[in-house]
Length: 287
Image 1 (cartoon, rainbow, N blue to C red):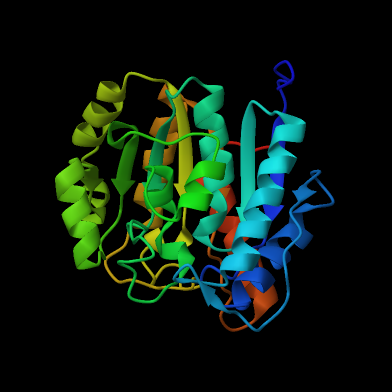
Image 2 (image 1 turned 30 degrees about the horizontal axis):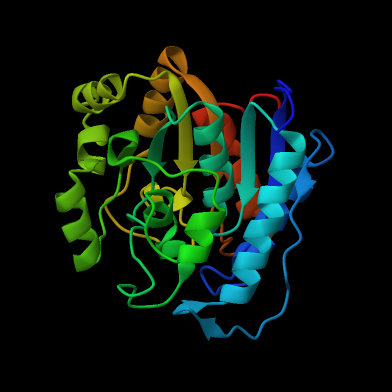
């Protein structure tokens, strides 16, 4: 690996196969087209083949693994200190998070802002959809080929689930077994960040990655997502949380994922851009 480059790598990774919904490719592309004139992105080639085959109990496995490998190669070539990902489904997170965790000597803390745990394995998944598996892979379990190709794995103490409110039974069992930190949307909406910050302080690292699946937001406030789930975080409280995180930690990576426009696509994209401006997500200020 080359010397530290000091740069931020902006990834455009519109993978959609993990959700089996091509609309996520279109959503990511709309956001990219709005931003690319102002910032340089490295694009990960994404298959547009509609026919998906289940292999290794993962729908679209061949495309997903190939795209994941391409993302790893692109990140290795740039060797960035920081990574921003504009992506399709949540499966795109494995390459950037595992790289940054390795880069920072296994000290990265990941806040998983998501309505779901994404903690299934190919054996436990009721759908075979990979976007329900990436956090489990990052924790070292799941498809062995993907786990082995990742740059590193996380320990349970490095992960904080924030706003998650819909789990499959195997995910609940895994959370209990590994004692993962879970902070429900209600606590965040009530402005109760104390326990979350206690968990962050216990992790003893200022290097933070923010995984941002848009479905963490209350769908009545932002419905443009693949899996709208009632009981989400209100945008005002999300803004408060991100401001506090930005003030207290070194944000070395973040993502914006699972954007699925409803109604007018252009209006939905403008709504998303306004949302990103409002929440002031770290690393997006330059956009």
